[in-house]
Length: 158
Image 1: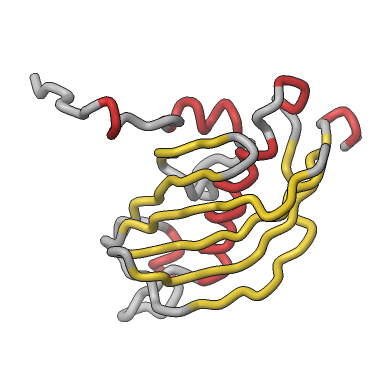
Image 2: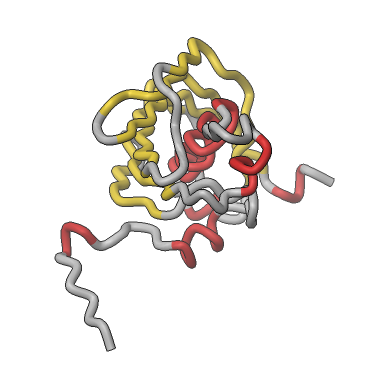
């Protein structure tokens, strides 16, 4: 039996089980594997491991597959939405996209890459959040955008 030799600094803040409890997304649309850093109201970091078996690679540029930019933005949104759902009164609520500004795709993302995701709070109000989202592969910036969200309790959705 293999031992888990992770140091305390390497242990995830949110593993997949906690992500499933927090986000409403499920396979194949859950685009965050782990949260590695969380400073409520300030910053969040995590990642998505990309295997060739991701469903979008089969149809997005077959023969030369790349991760669609819109899904990179969705991964940043899912990660950043966790920042909005930290308060006990917001648990079980949903973080909805309101706006995307200044989106830039700097480099393609390929099967086998690890997409490192970072969200830094630009503005946070009671039920609104504006985040600068950045995605990296091997330390190189691949995607960036400003993302705006609103938190809505599920009871207001009906």
